[in-house]
Length: 172
View 1 (tube, rainbow, N blue to C red):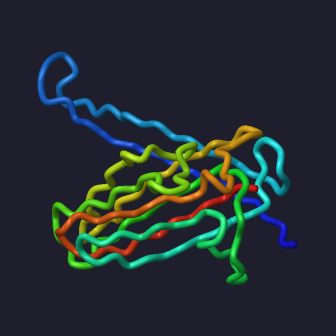
View 2: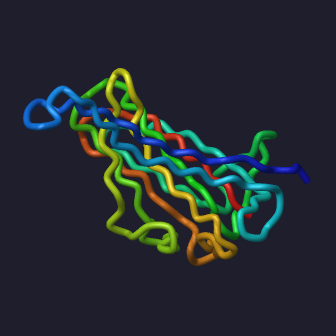
């Protein structure tokens, strides 16, 4: 079995130059950063599986993803998650069409509602310069439980344009 470890980082840093008042002309930084470090194993702060998938969805298309069969590891072998400690979804709009949205949701059949609701989260279009993305780290011992009845998510596009979606999952 492969030894898996890694880290997940998210950081947002913005600067604002104050236009008027006592602090006019000064620049303020507004930032938040997070990092989760994972060693090999199945306890808290550990992972022993990593999987990725890529799908191109036509306008108004959808793709059901089974977290126990539809992702592959670095060697191309299918992975079967029991718990998720980190996931990231990245959306690239193929036509560069503003207004494109991918909804990431639990599927109606055996939906992974421990991860996300059936209502889902809309992920707006990418721009020509930046991909749209969403990430979550759940490093505790339980993580997000995946089971035979809690394992499927669905990616759905609106009618604007085709998109390519990447899903990276790490867990045990």
